[in-house]
Length: 236
Image (cartoon, rainbow, N blue to C red; front, side):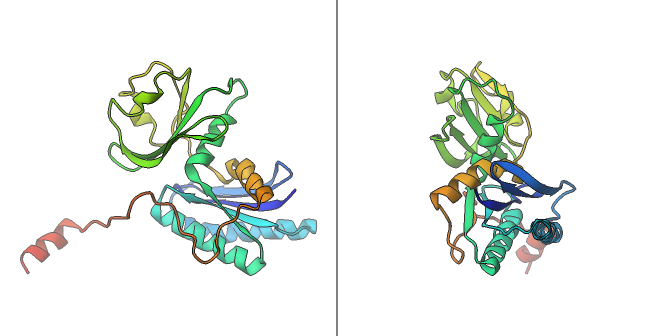
């Protein structure tokens, strides 16, 4: 099987993981904040040094495409493109919400397999980026931005169990109307959670374009103008 460098930068955590044959060979992460621009390149260099030490070569680079942090996603994808191009290896793109779903699946081994998994990434206030999947990762609800209220995901109330995961899920706990929920808390994806998805995409030859691939923001980035700047513009 392939040796893949997995890169995850969609949240405040910057993480990388070398995976091979369904196992994690080497991983690094930084959880101190948005240090991706500083940490990512040295992390990748250490991974490549580990490969060189073992006399092995990289087969592919995998990167989380979002949704998530605008800055983190740009940094992660730009770096992944450059590395894949320089090494002449394919690039694999993964949905952050699917990575979260896989993380939920591997939290324990007592799931029955007919549960529904809902990933929620915080998008400020009561908005989240979200999607719902079954245990075959078929979409039960497509990826989208959602403003949460008591009717959100009401169509899932009849499922045997709905598993909520992600840093946007806790603010939904108090207004969810169903009684069939399990809350995994503010967990976010890490590079080690990408292994199953990236290996499958490599086997399937499912790669993304090195030149034209873009992050999956789900909505346009909106900049805000500081209040003093607004006042200056009004009086100019």
